[in-house]
Length: 411
Image (cartoon, rainbow, N blue to C red; front, side, top):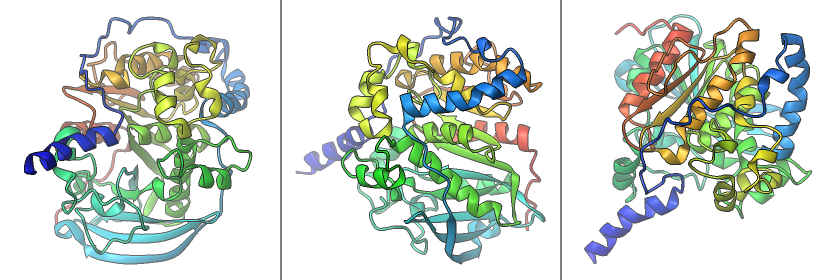
């Protein structure tokens, strides 16, 4: 019987998280120099032409890929509660916030570095688990019923951390605070669950037209967190980063196209429907992702399975829609399912639009040539899909290059 439980402990996380290819092929960079379509230069002859084309591109991404983007909402803080003024050995002030937005409710957890005067840059993170898991299983943190714990009391935690890395649910909070950043955590599944059956009712509430997708809804949740933080003087609304891994990386990239208050994006292993090209034909295909997760996208997106060349937009244009703001793309050499080469091609193909704003965009010439000071940069590490210590070192290098924070002084 113990062998059965051990087998299930290893197998079930693999079944529950369908974003990992178990074939583990090494990523090939042979296609890195292939041209990308549609040709973005047609729309980017000059800055005025590009800005005139933006609304049409946003419409196409909604109708053909993500579904209608939810309208702005009135976000209300129902309660703000101090949990610990000296959390993480005095490094930060930990709070939770109960918020409402157009009939939905969730909790945000924030931790702001102590010892820094004035507003600090903030990293907003969407989670696969509830906010407690991101903060070491802190039982004082409130979360909505049904939010998964994924903490030390869960039987799945050991195999999950082994497969996806020690920071899949909990970032290195102490290191981030020492670097001078505040963190804000939210579980977007409180608004739209990641379930094809349970997502339909909240999606129809958000988008009554009936063509809403979960990725767009989760992107909308990032904006609602920004609503809250921008009203508080201790958070710098000119240095707001959104961070997401895998499906959350897709929503992190999408929110930047629709919400110009996003100042920087880290989209880690965002894959198909995120940073990689739908036309790439590597990694996860449109057919595979829409069959597994039909609720993530507009129903129209599935119709392009097998005829990707007919899709009127592709992800390099979505990247270009956030120009000239910085974007970091994360990847791993054994995560071919997320197609890092397609992401590299998409990042470079957005360069003509970044150039319109005086930016060089992506300057690296190969996948492994990480240049954190560039406005579009791609980081690659050894290994698989997941979040590991080396990833966070790279994330902070990119953030430091663009936000130049004041480091926290030891108390």
